[in-house]
Length: 394
Ligand code: PMP
Image (tube, rainbow, N blue to C red; front, top):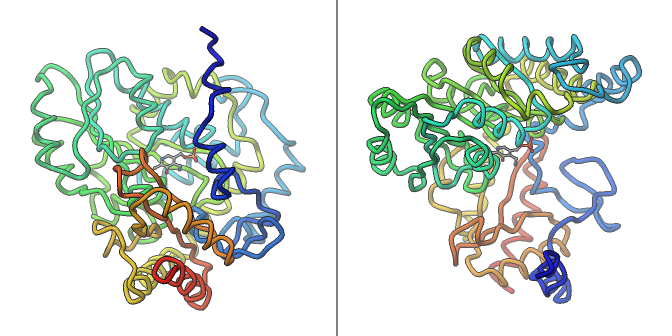
């Protein structure tokens, strides 16, 4: 059989393109901002992870430009060998102090961080225990590790305990959860997860891609939101959302980051973050430190949007109803209806992300909307009016 047969077979993508509702790979002709130009038209952006709006911040841009002029465009090597700049160390130290952890190491992307951390920490005789709605990069890390993976139903603490009981006492266990779930916008039940981890001698890792710069005092993330910073053993995060750049990190006790630094293949055998991205992540972090009101504004706006959608009669996923996170999933249920609605909303000037099975359970397709601290209430009202009109009246 020809291994390429599947590539030439009819696909859902071509079918959707023919029907004029294909929603992916749309190209921006402007900066990533609250309003963007796409296909020659202004669109209100309700689909970006640029939560603090810092990708267009003059200080952050200036830091990137200055650093690229001084250090060039790339590092041409791994952190392990020729690819470490003093700037990487400065970024790692700044993050360690912000997150109140001894050790931080940075990776090329958030995806790579999860793969690199989990594959290094979970050995042949270990167990990794995942929430079913964890991000794909966590699953990729589990697949790459030599350990055994167990999964529990989304935020179901009884099921988590059941899985923990399956781990023999002589084996190690790592519970991994998104802090803020990337599709659902709900917050992990960290108090219960940490208590169960303690009871069964497991360690806890939180992927805070959507929690950093969003939750907790000063935007320190999901653990700080619950006052549990000392009970979460490993934080993972990304620079591609609140910190307006590209890259990812792990924060933990120094002994743990040192172990990963010397054993993680995705860390050792891949090039380091380019100078400009390092500088912009650092500048964004400094800005966040100086402006704790930014995450507060983001949370207020997120609650404003939740109320706005509910008042307009739209159905938000239950678990995300009261969480102050900048991810609001609006149920549209059926796949073709969801794609059709997303296209109509886009044609009227609002960009949202349709999320379809298998990313959601069958029959629970939704429109994932997300918010930035730099949105205005007026802009959100305009977008919500358009969405309500399409979803309720067409
Ligand atoms: N974890 C979660 C929860 C995410 O949502 C994402 C990105 N969507 C990642 C990890 C990967 O981060 P990056 O885009 O930096 O690779």
